[in-house]
Length: 132
Image (tube, rainbow, N blue to C red; front, side, top):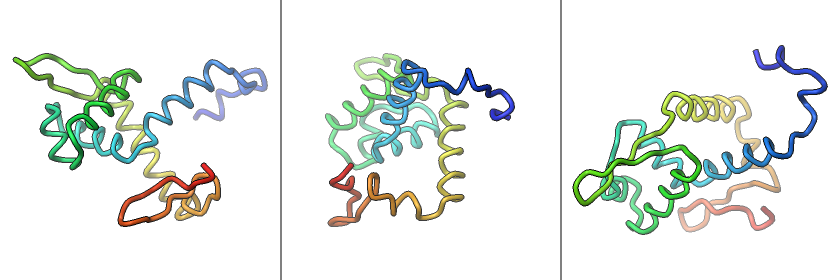
């Protein structure tokens, strides 16, 4: 258990580690990127496949894939004139997504009530709260 591995020295703020963790969570903080990661859990796909699945423009999917690639969460391999994308660290990515689902189940609606990070429905889409 993680708690058993903690000591007062290890819990001091490590700015570099905190920044890296923050960047990772920001990469996971977009519903479209989460949808892409979830779809890639089914296996590797081309951009056009992901575009059809998430219902976004090709340029938007490509931009999200670039973010996920830069964060080390997806990888690509060339196939002819296109690229096939897949999860880079599949067990770890799926573990984080599963842990997030468990935490959301445990906290219920509390995250949606947070005044800083609340999500509101507007015209059928989720939008970040203006104070975020």
